[in-house]
Image: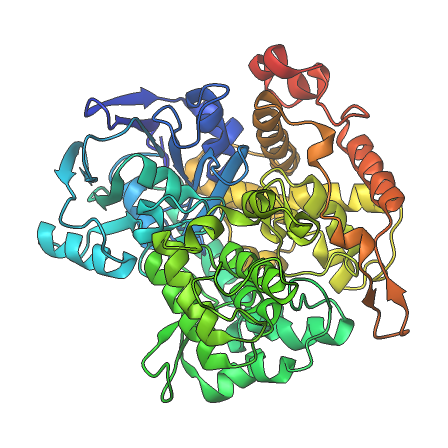
Length: 614
């Protein structure tokens, strides 16, 4: 077997036992890796109705077929579990050296269940698995934890995936951090680890990863890496994703002040261009990446002097424009704090924006907020609140629950502007303008995720007009989801998606040259559908209904302005329902969004068809 090991490592924290699950080439070809393999492991190892914070929930890690090889941007991993934020399946992705370490240690995936008696970290040293006391690490921030574990083991090559204080305090949107700047960021995977008293997974892998055809693979990888230096990735290489700020603002689709507007009057001061001129320190790449998009920035003076982190668009929108903040050093500090505490910047920012609007509307008072005057634009209050959330101090205990649960508890009409779907906070594309993405956000299996949908591309790239909708969007959204899923199964970074001549043919060739397992472009195309239906099947098993596929009331009731026409625009409920119906039809699902048995059988999911198919 090439590239793959055929081994899934199962770890039980409750009784400190391990076992190896053997999987064959047929299984690996069907699920490949990434989100599809992680979702299959989650479906098989998490019982129906499991408590996300219970020992029966499982953290399911999966690498790609390309981890540890020379295939560009192939060093990624997926981690899936039942989300404490949504109570549905969550799959998160992260990149860099931790993914390669899993494969080099001899595993295609890792499943972690149970709950430790005390704070613990797992050290996987090839075939040896140790359960180590992490009491002295409990309370440490993410970056410090990684360094402390390496020092304790005495090997700088050890790779770590860790949680920070937010995960320890079960913040429902806590993340997992690896290689300092990489996060499996959405859906609360860090909180699942925290519920298990699992501080970290440390791995030392010493086994080479062998590929089927090294010469041809090397030639193809080199040609692809050269292509990745072309115009298709120029935006990412120069400004990174913060280049989106001015582009989206000009179109009226930049979420501002808790999605009350689509234009931020101070966008110039929080743009990628401003960041590059005033705060840019260096640009770095993930493991095996020929693009290099990560923008490392720092604050050189003022109240946040010394703050240093990397900034992407989604963090910038959530903690910047959506909170009405135009002071870039304050945004840098807010992102740094989230990274150190181990919290998803997107959910953090959208939750704080909700609290800011509650304050300005008199729903939450200064006393409720521990003395903070939480007006939009108050960066000092934002940074103070981030720490409170991470440690569940005062008002932070409420906000650590996320906007859905917090608004339900506060009530007073605040649920109307809690910008979430299925419990997960919205992404940085205004859905009253990006109405194809409105559909993608509504039907997303893990919530309103731009990474899993890519439906916003149809809107922002003028494939369809902004501020309009139509039944054709159902097929468009379905195709964008499947395309994204293929990238997430093969584990190609999405920033390289325009470098393919043909995603299906190129992926099939990469896969065959790497693994020696023959795969056709048609089989690759089926992978996206299989992955999406598998994740949807998990949610159906957990009680999903079509009522879960909807958007917050604000999207229908509060207009934004189309800057091209001056017209005030909302999303009409009947239009969203029309697009959802068209989407279900395009997917081959029932009118109520359930998956027919024959569709699951067609996708090779016969056992699941018997359990949840209709």
